[in-house]
Length: 205
Length: 205
DNA sequence: CGTTACCTAACTTGCGCTAGGTAAGTAATG
DNA sequence: CATTACTTACCTAGCGCAAGTTAGGTAACG
Image (cartoon, rainbow over all chains, first blue to last red; front, side):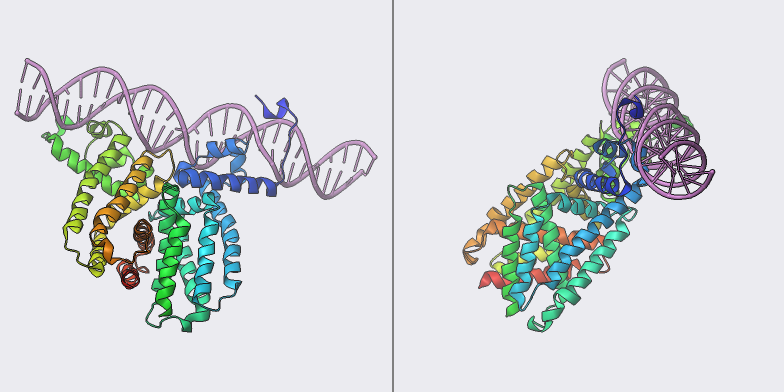
């Protein structure tokens, strides 16, 4: 009954527990979405009670924010390494994106997290609505200014870089949906490579 | 108190009520997703009580099925007219798809319905999971066999039509997400037109 | 007069969250 | 070095609400 009496009690330090909760919440959010994830599920998974979890994140929205911030960092790192890589010409650029897609295929959990949360957040009253609008704007700006910026003059001048960016992100998002739904029938990397090939050929003309 | 005593009672025939409920449920599903839609919300919107709605759809899952089937028909019609249109060459084909995207922009509710439900249904225990897997397979097959089939010999032979189809659907889905999230910043039709132009140019080579 | 279109009432379950504790760890003090 | 005092990491109990659903009726309709 009483968890204190039954066995030796182990108290964990805040940082470790927080991280464990975030990792677990990530999994649950990606599997059930924000609405579908409950404290009781999460609490059981990390071997705590519900108020035990609430001790770390005082509400469900705080938990969501925590999860998003937590991964924002990781994504930022991946993204930075992409920015720092050498890009002398257009094929270089798009082969980087191909690598990104290939990497994404190895972390279906995280991809599902963002795919599920983004779609959920289309509703204007969703707690992550503003976050995702902002995030997409930021990412698009990053592509236009940094990612493409360096070799802007090698690209056909009649192409709107903002539209091109929207297209690239759309392909990634859309592929992820079909791939997550039916991985056996959808070879995300192959299709992206096809896209990449088509685009590169076009841009170099 | 008693709805029977208060005013004249109007009984509606089953078909009308059913349709009204389906239309309203469509709106609610698209605004709040499946999980986020409640009977009390729906009941109020159609001026019934919750058991009143349950009289037509004995459970929430039946309601969801009803909504999906209801729109399956409408979509099928739109799709058929696309198939029957004249397609002599590749540009004809892709201009049809452009029209489709442009039409979609006029019915954000329906688009949101499917975008939200598809993403929600990525979870394998979602009641519409199998439905959407099946639907995507069916649509892809339709593209490969019917839509492209007629002018297959005019397309570069090194292009895998299945992959091309996945790409086209991905672009549409991905654009819809960004557009629904931030319509002011994302001109769905313009980006699709860009995509269309690039693809056509490539396929005709 | 039977069927159908609803209603009222209520049950059950599970949700997010609060109140108020207890014991383990940490730091300050004698 | 031992005692005390404080802080932190949890716990138990339970509240209030809303969800989906059921039972059993009543009155309008064909």
